[in-house]
Every structure is written in C-alpha cells, then in structure tokens.
Image (tube, rainbow over the protein chains, first blue to last red):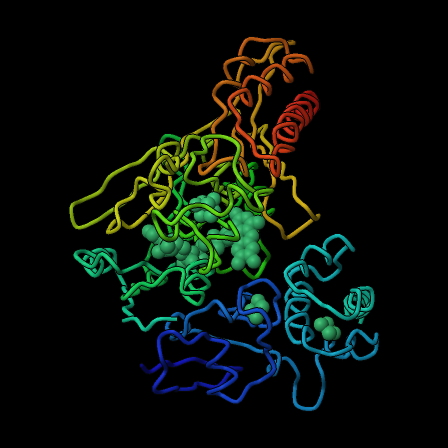
Length: 152
Length: 331
Ligand SMILES: Cc1cc2nc3c(=O)[nH]c(=O)nc-3n(C[C@H](O)[C@H](O)[C@H](O)COP(=O)(O)OP(=O)(O)OC[C@H]3O[C@@H](n4cnc5c(N)ncnc54)[C@H](O)[C@@H]3O)c2cc1C
Ligand code: SF4
Ligand code: FES
Ligand code: FES
C-alpha cells in the first residue's frame, strides 16, 4: 500500500508498504531516518518516540496505515540546520549520553515536556520520562540535562 | 506477524459493515495493545479495520449532567479534560497512573476497555493458556502467579484485566454504547467484562462484530470527592498489583454515600458491592473501613504466589477511605 506522511516538514510518499510494518520501520528503513531507535518493539522503552500530530508516541506500535496523512517529527527534525535544539545541546553538555540508544527518544520526550511545562519540577521530569528506559546512565545525568535545557 | 488486509474506515457505518461477516477481523484503535499482540502472533486477524479516523472524539456534557466520551478519545486527552478533572477526578487519576505518556497519547477509550491481560503465559506462545488456546490448560496455576486474580477466578484462568481506567468507570457506573449492523446497544460497565468460568477466551459481553462507539458517565455528585490509588512494584510505569477507586460522602460522622471498585484482583474491574453495603449508614471509622474491606475480600481465593494481594487490597481500601474522610472534611 501507499502511505503519505509529512516527515519533519516535508511531504513524503512511500510505496509498497506492507500493512504490518510500523511507522518506526517506515521511518528507519524506507525514509532513511535512523534516529528513532528500535529496541523493544513493545512500547516499553520509548527509544522509538516521535511526535505524531504534535504528541509523542511510540512509533513501534503505530501501524503504517495509521500514519497516513499525519505529521511526524523525529529527532532529526529538532535541530535548525547545524544548531542543535537546546535539549540536544544540554544532553551533550551534561554528558547524558553513554551508548546513545535511548537518547533520541529521551530527547523527543524531554522536548515535549519543556514545550508544555517550561519549568518542570524534578517529580514532573521523572514522570514525563517514565516511559523512556536507559540501561547505561542511571538517569542522573539525564535529569541534569533536562534541568539545564529548562534554564537555557 | 501474519499477513492481513488493511481497511481504513472514515465513518461508523463503513466500520461496522467492514467487520460484519468476517469473524477474524479486528478493529484497530491506538494499536498499543493489538499491534504488540499481532507482532507476537498472539492475535492473528486476517483483516484490520483502522478506526482511528472515526469522528468519535468528543467529550460532551449531557443534558442530565452526565458526560459522553467518544470511543476514539485518546487516554491523555480524556485525563486532561476539564469536565473529567472537575467532576470525575478519580477517572483522570486512574488514566494518568497507567502506562507512559507516549502510550496514553495513542491509546483510545475503546481500546483501553478491550485491552487483553498481561499474564506472561498468555504472551508466551510456547506455554499452556486457556485464554489464548482454549483447552490447552493454564500454566499460571502452578507457575508464576504473583500478578494474578484473587476474586472471581476459575480453575481455567487466573488472569486479571489490567486496565486502570476501567476500575474508575466501574466505580462510576458508566455505560458502554456499542454498534453493529444490527443496531445500537447499551451495556452497563459492570456487565461489560465477564468472569472466566469455563470460557476464559470470552472476556466481554461485546460481540465480535460490535464497535464500541462511546462511554457515558452518569452525573455522580459524590465523585467530586473521589480518588484512585494504585499499588505497584515501582513508583511509575507498572501495572497494578492492587488498585482502588473510591468516592465517599460523610454527613456528620455517618457514611451517607459510598462507591468502591478494585483493580488488579479480577478478570473484570471489581465493583465492591459487599463493602459498599457494610459502609452505607455506618460510622466513618477505621473499624468500619476494616470490616467493609474484610467483607469484600472474604470470597477471595489465592495461590501461594498472590496470597499477599488479599491483605494488600484490604489495607489499600482502608487507606483510600481514610484519605477521602480527611479530604472531605477539608473541602
Ligand atoms: C508498556 C505498556 C504499559 C502499559 N501500562 C498500562 C497500565 O499501567 N495501566 C493500564 O491501564 N494500561 C496499560 N497499558 C495498556 C494500554 O492502556 C492499552 O494498550 C491501551 O489502552 C489500548 O488502547 P488502544 O486504543 O491502543 O487499543 P488497540 O491496541 O487499538 O486495541 C486493543 C483491542 O481493542 C479492540 N478495540 C479497540 N477499539 C475498539 C472499539 N472502539 N470497539 C471495539 N473494539 C475495539 C481492538 O480490536 C483490540 O482487540 C500499557 C501498555 C503498554 C504497551
Ligand atoms: S491465567 Fe489465564 S491468561 Fe494466564 S495462562 Fe492461565 S489461562 Fe492463560
Ligand atoms: S522500541 Fe518502541 S517502545 Fe521500545
Ligand atoms: S545511554 Fe545507553 S541506554 Fe541510555
């Protein structure tokens, strides 16, 4: 089947999509956007988080057909040109990245949090990022990054 | 995942006629449960009717003071809605204590009602499971059953219904509106999910070709003093071991209105009518709360793995009622 999606502001047409493919697969394997990661494929880890029509979702559980006509924004769409988004910059500055697998999902989730709640409390940050698992950092540096981004 | 045909429906008549006469077709809501189950080959529909574009996305005040919620309203939208937050705080709290932000953004009201159990053996196609493969047995009975049910269980299945939202809906006496090519029907929430008995693969009173179109909440004044408490293995992002939805009105020192429902303990959201009977007209004291909780849990049947849930449920009921007394005083 054919799926039309606006990805990071650009209208894309994808042909020969199998209905069982996920939005995550379409983004990574058909549109060359490997930022969103495929880790659990069960909605549990948040590594695949992208914006769909302005709200963060787990792209691994979105069937390709459900994305038809929708606006998707991935981690690749956050920076403006060579300038990183403040959340991305804060992750770099705070050292919140180790293996990096969870990072794109966390960056999108944190970006959404700061859009809705510019000055989140620590419990608010923890709750907003509860759906994003990281097996490396122990989360402290990630919290630092979000606090830093909120200040910048 | 098995191959399937994909149909996207733009209106209700198209959706219900697409599913009529195809016993192996399934509606696709947010997909957060169905896509996962299809990927694991636990569900193998031959046709998917995508209903995410149906115009069932309203949250509207009814003339009698109740609220009508469209079946395609996203969980996050419902939890944040001013009508729900002010009139039914218990529902808002229950939704926000479930899953993660990303999942709530995608999950729909209809899909949440019909989500399947989280029993590990149900997910493991190598295990015996009467729900997934009727007649194959139940590996949970002699196996890992810490998360399993203690009320309304049968010798064929101990699974729980994992929804938080549904516990609040049961407490509020919601009605589920469903539609098929045969017409429209209204099912009281407390009759929507059914106990396992000899047919644990039958989980609801919904026919395979019926679409959930809406959930209606009656006007419930006492719901303004309501609360949802969820006890789980970690502070966030885990299914309930036990949960309690409660609403309470105390006049003087006497309980004049009470509603109570339990989650994590049964194949359906469990309306605690026995506890309600004990409480109504009783003094609003720890002693009554304990008696009420014990009366409800008297019928519990546990296995060594989930025996702890009986005491946990009793203590959680008492704690929530105690909190509502204090909160009601302050209000
Ligand atoms: C990692 C993870 C953690 C979770 N944690 C929790 C939790 O703590 N608490 C909790 O309550 N839930 C939790 N959930 C479950 C989540 O709430 C459900 O997956 C979600 O509510 C299902 O809604 P959906 O719209 O995505 O359903 P779908 O996946 O689209 O559908 C589920 C079922 O409902 C049927 N269906 C959907 N809509 C309709 C309709 N309108 N009419 C008839 N049939 C319909 C489908 O055919 C399918 O059988 C969790 C899920 C995941 C993946
Ligand atoms: S408890 Fe129910 S769902 Fe779990 S293995 Fe037994 S029959 Fe299957
Ligand atoms: S890959 Fe989607 S949530 Fe883990
Ligand atoms: S940095 Fe490795 S999973 Fe988070």
